Length: 318
Image (tube, rainbow, N blue to C red; front, side):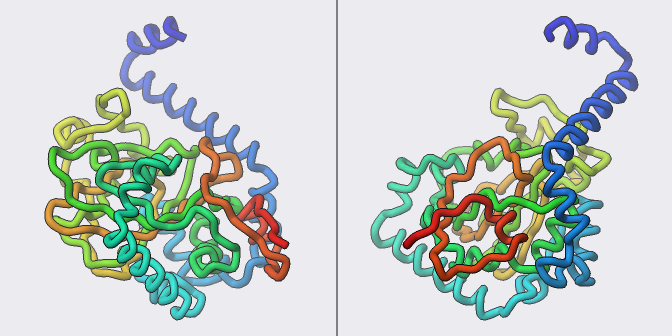
């Protein structure tokens, strides 16, 4: 392997880029072949979960996601199901944040939760790690329009790997960890859906992304020098991709962002205000990291074949 790396360094930049593209293409083909049942299920039985696949909004948002690696909308347009369902989730989220403020639950979440998403100094993961499949936050994950967008992007039935409620707060010191530019390595391709639950300005930790650096994008192979954790400062990133190409998503509460976080992204460091954000994570059926969320299926919970694919293994409770 070291000999191969040394030989690649000696090749012309154009040849090296062609070899990287070939490697990327082969990896993608192998990944799709290992998810063949999900690919076939999507293309052969796409209408089975409802009208999401034929929904004009889902198709338009899915196409933009394929092109740019990111797309934004609002919960009132993006969710095909009743808006009352999201209202229930929003009420739950604010209750959990209030409980965290009064019981210092965020500190215990940082020290005991096994998921690295929930163990950062500046972030508390507030969502319980056991949910029933009938819970409103799970039902939103199965929304026909949302599944239509994700499936159109990935070209297969997705797997719901994670859900959480992130409470990010200002902390002393410089930006670090996911506050720096990075790519996620959860899968070859993935989609994360974020919903702002409060207005997010520059001082409140907005999401940042560089369009077309996702696996389907022409800028996917643009890679700056990075630290041991593959985190990059603005100075390092600017040497490869100009700041004019970076996007910062300041937006009001209710804004939805869907993106492939295999592209370059970060959550800007909150300076003065908190950020409360819902996150759903969709991958293929073979993500690199196992689900830490436990889904409980009670006897009365009926699921369609599509929803069973998306949710994967669940535990029945008598």
